[in-house]
Image (tube, rainbow, N blue to C red; front, side, top):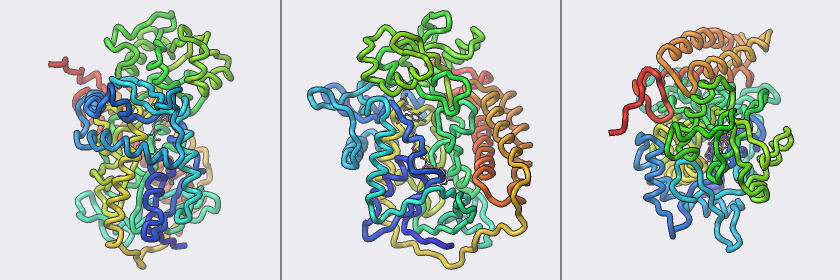
Length: 526
Ligand code: FAD
Ligand code: SIN
C-alpha cells in the first residue's frame, strides 16, 4: 500500500499533535498522524509539573527565564533558541488554552503558578499534578475533531525513505539528502506500507526506555533518532541524559512513578535513610538546586551510605494543602501504603529526559531536507547541558508553531514520487526465539544503567562500548534475516541510541551539565 499525505507526522505527543493542528486544512492540507501504540501512550501524558512561561509580569520577565535556562544548561544552550522559546511561550500558552487545556487558577482568576528547581520565579502553569494528561486529552479531542487529520494508531515507523532507497549511495557527506516519507509497520497486520509525505515530521519523543530505571513510558525507545542516524542526518548532544532526582522508589515498577519537582518547590526536603537532611553538603540552593546537581547529590548520598534510595519529606506541610496540590501523587502513594502527609516518600533518580537529539534549525528542520523534528527527539539547542524543569512541553509547542509556518511556505515545492520501491522482506522469516530479543533488550538496559548513568568514567564507557558492540552485531544479523516486528525494531533502535550516547559521552572530555566523568573533574568557577 502506498499512502500519500501533505504532512506525514510520526508521533502523537504534544509535539506531533500541536504541529498537526497548526497545519491541517490550510489550503486543504491533509495530515497523517501516526503513533506506534494508542494516541494516549506518550511521555506527554505523564508530565506532572507543568509548562514554564513568564506570566506574572509584576515580578517576572523574559530575561529572568532566559538567565535561568542558560544557568541550568551550564551555558551550553544556544542563546537564539533560548530567546525564541522564552519569548514565544506566552503565545503558545494561548494556543494550548484555545485547544481546551485547563490550567489551574487561584481564587482571583489568575493562573496559579508553581516554582521548580532552577527557576528564580513562580512561572509554571499546571493542572494540579497531572498537567500532561490534561494536555494530551485536550489535544486528542482537538485532533479527533479535525477532518483533515487521519489518526493512525498501531503504526510503527521503521525507516525513513531517502535517496538510499532509490539505489543511491548516501553517506554523512552526501549533500541534499531528502526524506520522502517512511516505511511503516502495521503492528496489527504485520504489513509494511509506504507512507509518502511532501513533508515528514518526527515527533517520536525520548529515549528513557534505553535505561532500566526510567520515568518514561516504554514507547520511549528513541526510534526517530535512530532512524535519522541511519539515514545519515546529524544527531547532537546525546551525552546529556537528564536523570530526574525523585522518582518513586518502588522496586519492580517500570516505568517509575514520578514525584514532581514541584513538590520540592512547595517545600518538601530530601533526607537520607537516617532521616538527616543532606543537600546543604552539595549546593546552597538545597533541594531546589538544578536537577543534575540534586540527582548527583542523591546518587552520592546513596553510594556513601550503601542505600538504594533516599526520602522526600513533605510531612511538615499542611496535609489538606498537600492533597490539594498533589492529588495524583497522594492517591498513587496511598495505594502502595504510603500516606505522604505522614510518611516520608522513598525516592531515587531515574532516566527522565534527553536534552540532545536530532539537530534542527530555528524552523525545526533537520539536516535532511523535507524532514522536521519536534519535541523531545529534537535538539534545538534550548537545553544545552541540562534542561530547566518544565521547559520541554513549551519548547515542543513553540517549535511546532515555527515548523508549521516554515513548512506551509515550502510545501508547494515538493511533490510525491512514483519510483519508491515497496518494503522488501524477501528471504526473511519470523525469529524462532523471541526471548533472544527481550533478553538483549534487558542487557542493553543494564549496560546503560551500570556504565552510562549519572556518574561516568572512561573505563566504564569503554566497557559499555565493547559489550554493546556484541549486541549490535547479533541484532543486525537477526534483523536482516527476520520479518520486521515492533520488538526487533525497538531493540535495534535502543542499541543505536545507546551507541550514540556512549560515543558522544566519550567525545566530551570534560564534566559539564548532565555529563559527569570522574576522569574530568568539574573546573572550579572562575
Ligand atoms: P511524546 O509525548 O513522548 O510522544 C511520542 C510519540 O511518538 C508517541 O505518540 C509514540 O507512539 C510516537 N512514536 C515513537 N516512536 C514511534 C515510531 N517508531 N512510529 C510511530 N510512532 C512513534 N516536561 C515539562 O515541560 N514539564 C513537565 O512537567 C514534565 N513532566 C514530565 C514527567 C514525566 C513522568 C515524564 C516522563 C516527562 C516529563 N516531561 C515534562 C517531559 C515531557 O513530558 C516530554 O519531553 C514531552 O512530553 C515530549 O513530547 P513529545 O511530543 O516530543 O513526545
Ligand atoms: C516534574 O514535574 O518534576 C517534571 C518536570 C519536568 O520534567 O520538566
